[in-house]
Length: 238
Image (tube, rainbow, N blue to C red; front, top):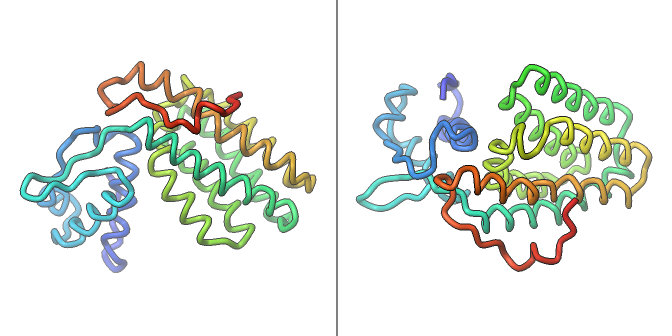
């Protein structure tokens, strides 16, 4: 959490992003207590925006605020991750289909630039940078179809899936595989192949189901449950 806040801009949203990334990167570990006073002092702000940030993080399922007891980073729930992935698949497959009719050559170039950035991050072993570019890739697809609500839904669901995605790099989900999946998505969208774009996006978003059991096995102290929802039983996982 070495970020510098822009003190002329609203503080709480910036704290949400900084703390969210720290939770995803396991800099703030599941079960760890968070102190309003300590975080306020660390960033040189009052406790009110910290309190507001905690509320937003609780709404995203990343922390638990216990009255008179404190605020704690939630452990990872396999069920919550699987349910968030379910929502992402429904929304992002629709986004991929719509993008095939709306995308411009300039937007194709931007997507490919993000993929190249991921390739460079992978070569440098920069997992945090890779994750940011991954988020930018999916955000850009939502922008292409001009549906900011879909973008917000995806961003909310990522709060759960990104914790596992970060832990999966590079072992459970090899970076070259994720890059190849992004390339396949862009290729299908550029070719105006709606069925292909949806299929490639579906394959990409189901990859996390391969990584999830292995990560839970390797890091049992980070997880609160091992039960998967019923809807995962019928899925074809690549």
